[in-house]
Length: 513
Length: 98
Image (cartoon, rainbow over all chains, first blue to last red; front, side, top):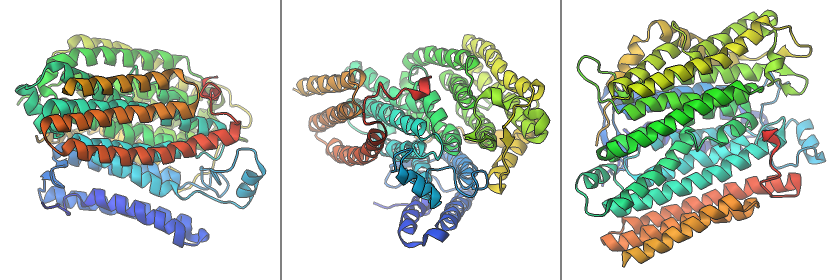
């Protein structure tokens, strides 16, 4: 029994930093706490990234930590992407200039909104620096989730990533009632879906006699039990996974939670949760259940169509920008899942398979998403963020740079050529097409045209509307500008030179069993 | 023999799922989720006995620890909502739908 400490060092480092962060809450004086937490968080993620790259160069791989995790090419890619997106989205947490010297999180989350205790906490300029360790715990769980080689590790990782997110959702400084409500909804529905996940785990264990994904794959090939248990287990497990991805009919939490959560947290969830959830879905369906491909592909295809319809059509009717982006994230979950449904294994002439194209799409979607939510934190009125689309009117005149960057992200979401979004869409649709789901690709292209309407509507409002009184672009520090710049450059560069990242994604396409 | 345990687990799971969907009190809904987790525990233990392996039994300990952690987080959220609104009804939590 050995544990490959070096191979799992990136995950361990993130989790240890989270524990040290909790300790820092107790021992570091309040005045230095914010700086200490930001430093610890950024340093641990950067060092974890360096460790990841050295491990990758050294060719470490295979089953690690007594076979509970699988360190294969997709894992490396997802860990790298999670660390990069985790870093740039957690940087936005550290922004204090926009709020007049305090962070976007509640002064004291335990106080009742509107009470004297809350006013005193705000007047004393208290801050919840616990959000940084919480974000690190979530990030650690997200890294383990898609790397799990057995279902119990996967279940524990699912909870480790979810529990801190529930708390972080309820910690907004402004509009605290909405924030608390978002936390309650996310928590109840998340706990509900993880109960389904767990019952699915129990049934698959009963079917295969083991929690190992590879042992389940073997049992699917050589059944020893009736397939009823297998189908029930597969379905229940899928409910838990697809809830986290945000696939219809398990998407109901997305608009409410994205809208109510503090915007930096929404940016973090929008990409990192989705990346981890899609990664775990890929691993479960491609490693453990690939023998049952013919039974899950058609069902999943139906759900994907419903997802794209709901995301694109409901997105048209929204008046709040965070809610619009939530429906956009549902639509994008659908686009990503077209590649998953295709289950295209790659060929010598077109090697970009379903796994690689889904991972590439996630990177592209993540860049635009982190950037867009960071921009949303900057557009403000007297009561905080101005999230109504109407109040973004005329932003192109008052602040052309920011509006231009936001327009770039919207164009990338739309999938306009020369932005990264176009290459991403092309990759996932090609994988679905080659996997034999031509009809699904046609539906997806039509629905991405529908979705284009609401992205373009935002651009039209920004550049052709009259400026609204009282809405200003806040003066932000580098903690907000740096993520926006990274995202904007990433979207533009990947749109023109997608080669290197596409190559990495293509190389990261084979799951070890 | 295994079937009876599974039927019981499935019945408990269904009661829990229906409880989450029809009860309006956040605390009762949360208790129903715990019932679903325990139904899964029963299924895990029954299958462990059926296969003659310890994996399933060990897994229930993981589930219990996770459920305890979930209670900590869940009650914190529900109590903060209760302090704000003097109610834990999920029907009253509808600001986001307006």
